[in-house]
Image 1 (cartoon, chains in turn brown, yellow):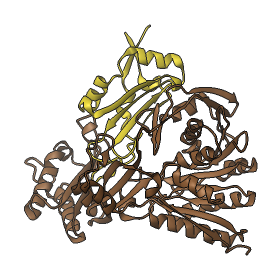
Image 2 (image 1 turned 90 degrees about the vertical axis):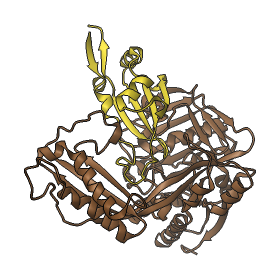
Image 3 (image 1 turned 180 degrees about the vertical axis):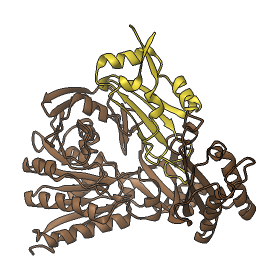
Image 4 (image 1 turned 45 degrees about the horizontal axis):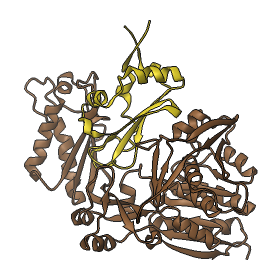
Length: 459
Length: 108
């Protein structure tokens, strides 16, 4: 081991999604952490950004956090690691972040430094060849193994990197690393494992730090936390003046966004947190011991994410106030659906209604079956191969709510209220087509690490 | 027997995506006593949760009583992946409300 401990600062659980808070970051940066790490990815934002290859957040927010981290890390001379660039971690997002780092180096007149980056994009042919050779692309979360048909419906695929490309980049002595799609744990675990700390504690530390202040209390997002790893334990400390890392907050975070609080899977193995012990080490610090890392038996499995376009999409909004119409809203929507069917047939498009005030949020899982609301808001989505068709379907599906034929309705001059008599173009509709794993001989076969020298500053 | 609503016993009741195909629910207690009360009531189990949400039991992938955090956690499979057209809750963050009103029996 190169030293007795390493310290990592994390200012944000999803760089770019909302700006990091400066105060707690600056408090943390003053303590001169060994690494500045932040993940920028998420699948929470839905399949659109990956499928359509765009970010889910404004560029200014991404730049804000990259600037905050880069200036602090370069002034101190500590490495900075960003995972899953631009939400999706696709090539275009990695390139965007690499260019942003170059621009910021120039703006701040930074001394030359080494910048490593890698892509996570997976060509469809790579998987097609594997399937044709009889290899299994195994489904996750109850999905069946990937078929050629599902692959055909996919527009873009990324592989979720583990520690491997980050360790490679650190071996190349990178000062700044911009990663393609990655496990958010890996950006913390890689430097710790490379320095010789136990895999179990290294991965656990990543798991705890990846959402920044979500492991602290009281609740408050986008505040910095610092994790420290030794050969024996992990300690995590809240930097914000109003937050603490407690046994409850850190243990509670082990559950967050995971279907099971005991097990976490990464490329190369599984972290078993069943026997984790949590103790209050200092007022703002929780100490954790006891995680176990179980390396994968056989080939390394790398997770894949894929998104495919369903169609162009328009959205319409209608309001209903008449109590008789509200009571029979299902019949009203059946009428509107039938009008779409009359024009476009049964297939070749999709039509959806979310009925707010009834079961708009929970749909079929809503236990309250009868609406007690005096008004409803109906959001109609039409999805079709072309924009023109999607617009017409959505217009029909929305406007026909106005013309619904109910036997005893009093208001025969229109059964819906419109705040505007038009339908709105929305982003294209996508669907998560791939949530699978691929087995690889070498975890690096999916990731190619590049190194450049950024000299635009003082040189 | 007297009952108390789950919302009055728990510190946190939340739901959120666990990946693209599942929604996970966390019920977290501040006090060990409240956690034990709810856990020992046996009312939070796969069968009752499936019935509350009107789904079949095989839609639940996990059900865990997590002692270190005084928490009960369960996870359901989505019918369609998050963010598919028509999905009204792409983060899965507003699916917990039916849990708030579960009545937990308490000794007088």
